[in-house]
Length: 67
Image (cartoon, rainbow, N blue to C red; front, side, top):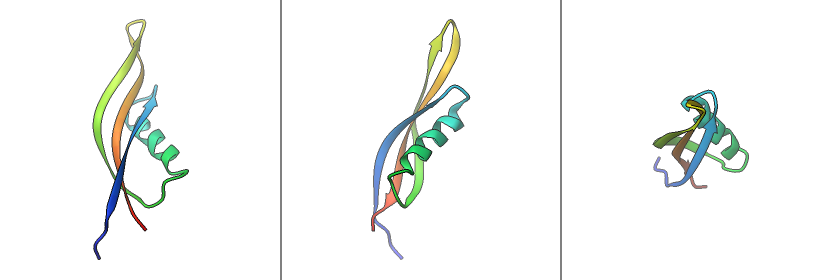
């Protein structure tokens, strides 16, 4: 079976770490985007407050199949 994919770009954030930032982005997208199949991390960065990591920001491409 062949599939056609469309992809979107999302940026998730989390004070706990990179993986949670990705999970937060995917969970929010899942509220409106169906058939998500893959993701690719395209950028990772963080926000600093008082010399400490305040939160992580991770940008991902998410692919989903078209119906």
